[in-house]
Image (cartoon, rainbow, N blue to C red):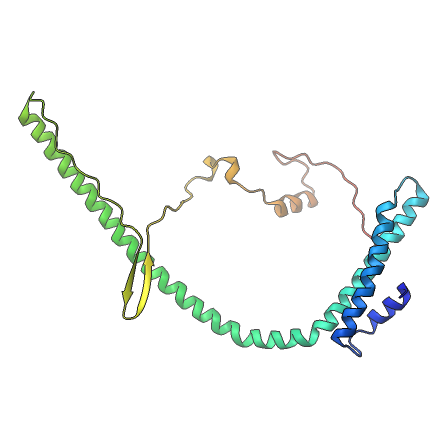
Amino acid sequence: MQEQEITSAIKSVGKSFSATGFIGLMTNFEVLVDDMKEKASKHRVGGDESEAKSVAMATEAKKLNKLIDGARMKAKRPYLDFCNQLDSLVRPVQKVLTEIEKGEKKKCVAYRNEVLRKQRARELELRAIADKAAEKEKKQLGNLNIGAPIVKPVKQAAGKVETFAGSSASYRTVMAPKLVDISKVPAEYLLVDWQKVKAAVKGGITQIPGFDIVEEVDAQFRS
């Protein structure tokens, strides 16, 4: 099947579409693309003539790419319309249910964090009392070689599942980072906002600490 026949067939998609026919069409199109790929891989640009050929090859590839993408969208359109209708019915309901779940989770976590805070405060209070008693006893014992009473640390409760009238909630304490000073964060934990950097350079910024702003050639092909 020649390129002209394939492109003509692609343009007709949507007028008399059949899934089987479209799959067969794509099989033929893959053969054409493989041939184009092989020619492109062997092509080298070393002068005006070879550059012109390279531009022609790139332009043709872009044109066919747009053509096949348009055919793909035509083929998908009926199914997309149905999916969009389905999503418009389902997603609002799912959104409400998700918001309910997140809202109640937030309340429960806030409550459990407050319980944990009070528990830790009580542990510190008991520790202070025990330390004070140990110091007092040490003074009373004087120079006797008797160690102070050992205060065992309170073990952190393991994750557990609690049931409430048929519903269950699993709770466990986890370590969570809280950002307090970004200037002290090590470089390996930071990410470069490339979109912001590129937008700044495009807007005329020529100096950004940590970057070399250099001229590079870009190319665009019209199909």
